[in-house]
Length: 131
Image (cartoon, rainbow, N blue to C red; front, side, top):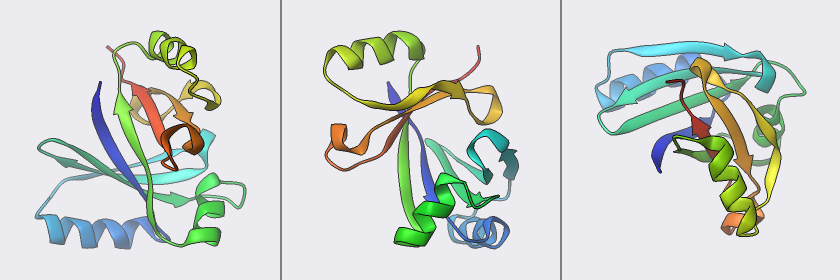
């Protein structure tokens, strides 16, 4: 397993992407809307991972609820695995609790989220990229 990305909740993804681009000296940013999660994301590719800036697209979005409660900031870390189904089974055997089932994520990935109480207060996403 390796760190895939760090996700940051933002109010305005376009403006936030400009700030990150300038601060990190990155020229290419990809934008995508993930309807199933109710977010518009900006993906900033770095040499050793990605940063995903997430803006809610509707009031039911978990990111909207996060912003209302905590304001902009770190939302979760994502861990990449080659076989998400096997990894979920293994982790459940260790007592790890998940928030829902495996579902589609951005760029054709499969994702699921680990409940923060399983990782001492940290929300984590497991993701598996298409082969």
